Amino acid sequence: MIGPRVVIHIDRLIKNYDQIKNKLGRSNLMVVVKANAYGHGSARCASALEKHGCKSFAVFSIEEGIELRDAGISSDILIFSKLDISYLELAVKNNFILNISNLKDFDILKSFSSKNKNSPRFHVKFDTGMTRLGLNINEADRAFKILSHNDELKCEGLYSHFATADEGELSFAHEQAGKFKEILKKAYSFGLEFKTVHFSNSGAVLNLDQNDFDIVRVGMLIYGAFPSNEVPKDIEILPVMEFVAPIVEVRRVEKGTQISYGGVYKTEKESNIGVIQCGFADGIPRSWYKNGYVGYKGKHYKIAGRICMDQFMVNFEDDLPNQGDEVLIFGSNDFNSISMETIAEEIESTPYVIATGINGRTKLSYQN
Ligand SMILES: Cc1ncc(COP(=O)(O)O)c(C=O)c1O
Image (tube, rainbow, N blue to C red):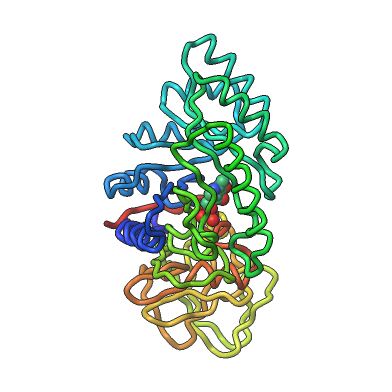
């Protein structure tokens, strides 16, 4: 079937990786490839990055980790999700790094390791202000006592997660960083050592000083979009995802013709209306129709009326597009550029939602 396509520009992914590394100086990157690499295809993206020298990835679920191992990824893989007993054996088998985020998780680890004479690798997560997963700060003494008395437990890292690193107002982020540094100090006072200490996400890479921690967990930025409009955009990144869809019909209509469901859009003059084979079920955000547009041969053309499940219409006015040509929904190609950030701002969403919303019949293809 002809229909929507996402072209993933691997060359841009690699360029973004290099740009971020250059900006950071000494810190390494743990590339976050959860949710199918934010819609970009986790196995393909991780393979390309691993070949380029990346040695560390993060996913959310254990299944996402297994998908990477099945694709031949041999680098470190951190699993972000809440620990489940069923993960332990899989973690050992697949050499995953688990997320320990509750004191009870240590009991699970201890009983597994005494039974199996083996412990999975893990990082300990503290909650410093996200109020999601993570040990409470006042549990640090107990956690570090357990770690310092149980050498068989393979704790390799300590981390936390910023809640507001991509905002313009950064006092809360600084507070979180301060708390994390206190936790780290405490860990060292127990004689503990970690292979990796990490905190920063894309927002922190742009907004905060990176020199305190040795790995940065980066997602959105590596895919070529800024996490918000409040960060300094002082790094050159390229959109990795190019979302296009074909024009399958063109008809000339009179002034005042009503288009799509609800008839909320009417032509202001005689116009060429194109039907695009892509709908909200494929990943184009439905609410973008109000002020939205697509790119075609270097120009922008208005989306005409509500986006349907499988199709939407575009007003090409007096230009006559070729049936079978593709329009650009977002990303950039030789003719046009429309950023996910622009769409996100207009529809009060985020590039994270837009990228991971690619769905349905949209085919992913890769360009090196
Ligand atoms: C724990 C954790 N670290 C890092 C990231 C990467 O964030 P970003 O895509 O903003 O770089 C995420 C993404 O949501 C996350 O959940």
